[in-house]
Length: 513
Ligand code: UN1
Image 1 (cartoon, protein in one colour):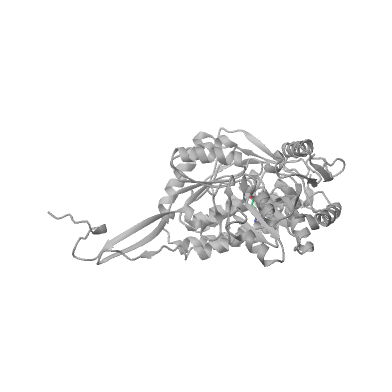
Image 2 (cartoon, rainbow, N blue to C red):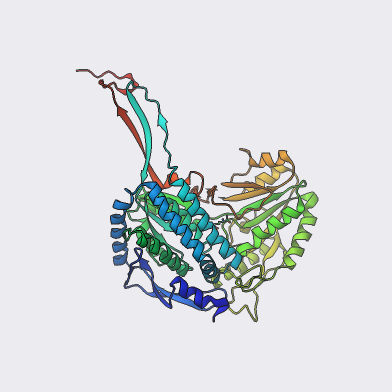
């Protein structure tokens, strides 16, 4: 089916009916792997097939990447930044097409597909500036005639494991930063959205080629966890940056730790908003609505819990229910629709089971869920965003269900609200809705939110790339994207230089013969 001109889009992006999935840049390797289909949750159609990476082709990729690192690491960082500037421009040219493919392969609205590509463009701009700002400190030596400073050197091969929900942006946060840092990247995208990765690889490979750069700076490998495992267990890959479920992160983290490699983990969230009696309710409702139903609840920053002051609880419940009543669910490429499908039928099953379980635990459906059927919903992946009144200790409320299920809870004191808010295993994003300065500052204080992201009067999702992105506890502790997250992609070297004619030892130690 040619939904909204998707055929022409695929052609322009170089995505075919059958694609190789293993690439070192402009070169694509044939493997002994199976061809696996990528289905669109929008209409259930096969978008294209892709051949999985095998052990042998993985080895070729790693060899090429190692060779490329030898030259790429010596290119001055601002010159590496110039390449990223060109990639940013290539992404600007491809924005509509890539946004549409992301929307079609993943199921998010076209607006959000465009937003995802914009996030890639933004990180390119950030990385270009960063390429002249990879600063180290200078220190005062305790020894006369000595100088101390630190340098940041490229680390080597960076393995990137990304999830289906942001199939391209999260890769770009990692790769653009890693590239200006002088690293080379090996990307294993989600097996649920591999064609968006193929399109990205074509875009960046062209820029590297036009600049006469070698194969191996941008590499792609495709497959399920077994392909990821080749990388996580591989000593030649000093850093693995993995985004996805806490379950996956625990496995990856342990495999990488077993070889004392570095991992950067950005895992599940169970993000809450506290709505106090001093909230601007217009903003609170809009923030909660987008946070809960945007991307059909499939962002790691999606709002899953509302912790509402008793005095405004009923009003929030009513206003939110009425807003849910106006949501239009359907083909995400059609801009009149607010909510698209879940990624696949397994996700639909998990959504249904979560609703059943929370009801069994005592949860009360305020806006009932369910799977949509009939014309336009043939893929079987469209579900109704739902709202459930629940209690913080319920097992389901403690878990991240990657679907549009929103739990409402009531509180009386801010202390109680913060305790409830922090009383889950995850710690990614959080928000408070209040016009009271004391409440806002208490939420942001050391005794407030325990998350990596804490907002005031905006929702939990939709972070800008300029900040460090990630969270605590079972969210994994890693930080990607802006601020000084780049440090994870480099190795720090402390240098002490003696320009005197003596050789004094540190700590005043005497050692004369
Ligand atoms: C994710 O869901 O893994 O903050 C990333 C946001 C987006 C990124 C989400 N900028 O919602």
